[in-house]
Amino acid sequence: MASTVLDGREVAVVRTEDATVRMLDMATGLPAGAPLTGHEYSVRVLATAVLDGRPVAVTASEDGTARVCDLGEAAGDGTGLSGELSEL
Image 1 (cartoon, one colour):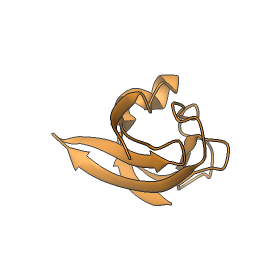
Image 2 (image 1 turned 90 degrees about the vertical axis):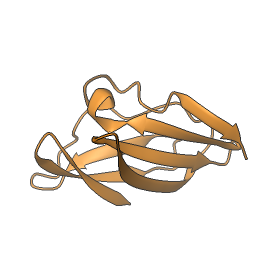
Image 3 (image 1 turned 90 degrees about the horizontal axis):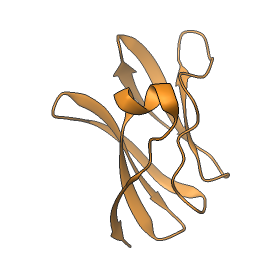
Image 4 (image 1 turned 45 degrees about the vertical axis):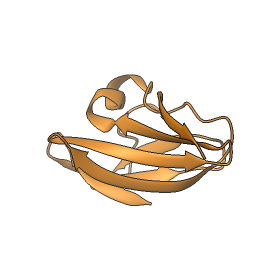
């Protein structure tokens, strides 16, 4: 689990066994957008950072890929984990 601030709200960013990453509003515990998809297998590594002023999640999966997701863009549509960085 990691955390970040998204549109003024603190959100928890959590990895799951179903190959998705989910964002939860820390004040309410409710989902903060759709699950983020893109990996084929379980997400094993998750970190958050700020890149060019935007909150991002960096993930690595058992499928051998690492990805970066702009959480601000992904919060609304769940398209997130689309940017493949490399084969691990």
